[in-house]
Length: 184
Ligand code: AMP
Image (tube, protein in one colour):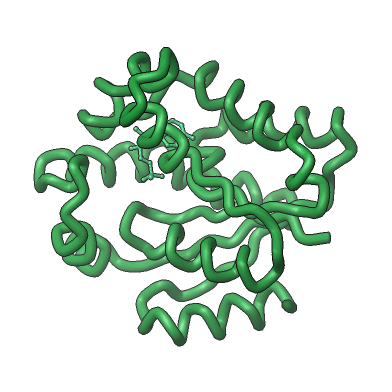
């Protein structure tokens, strides 16, 4: 049973690597950013509420993402494991997840910290060209990452759940290191 949380700055390659590993392990890749973008595209109530935050590079309020994660992890395909990409993004969300996993008997999760230097992630993000990848929004997202999300590295290290992978390598090299580190 593999349950993994992917941590790391925007542009570190979390989405790509989480997708590859999830396919390899036949478990769902759950990206809160993807779910929010889809909801925004479809203009669902969730999408409408999330829009201004996502466009500005701010975090969507906890309640919105926590509800969607609880619902997603409760679906049948998540019973055989999962990779969470983009959640939790702050300590309050990590505490929520800890409690949720305990309540639903889905423990044993490990956390992959996919790290890469600022210069590398900025170059990658500018190259990607998503709507929230303008230079100004990228700067804000990195700031939010440093202030809100990076403290989760210590949070999970203290709980002995942290694995670290060097994201400053080619895509193929990261994939190999990741599979070695998670033992798949
Ligand atoms: P991502 O695709 O993970 O880079 O997420 C894109 C955007 O979705 C972020 O900049 C946030 O606005 C929003 N988002 C995704 N996950 C979360 C989360 N766990 N908490 C709050 N906002 C989130």
